[in-house]
Image (cartoon, rainbow, N blue to C red; front, side):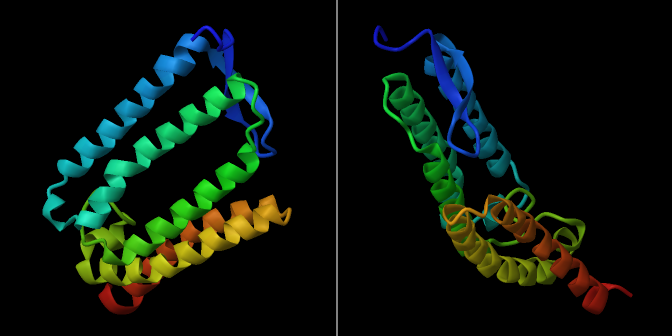
Length: 186
């Protein structure tokens, strides 16, 4: 506690430069409490799902570990920067986002019909077949986008990297709608 400055870096921009600071009490206590509350909201929301029985064990493992992993990463980075170490957030953040997309993409095809985890749009929620096909379509796209996100960012194309996030989000929605129009609308 005594070695930490009164103001600590708690946010970095896309170039990895510190651009947000918080008080020492907030950085040491408030930020972990905030992340802890987010974590419990995710767990409670997932458990309260009327179709919670459809959540595979692997999906629940993700729900249990994503927020705590982010918390450890955030706190470690904040403490390291406060103690004078240069934290290459531009690289670390890119790796975390890319790997997260790859992990989630790997699990999307295994995600059964529910109301809290997955691609929840009207067409997937109203049809289990649409849900299954959309998630099988989305999984590989998310994995590929995660890999490309890291590669493009490291080679100096951050705008294209951000575009990949939109592609990963929009492509499954478009696919789901087109599937609905072709096979399910009367």
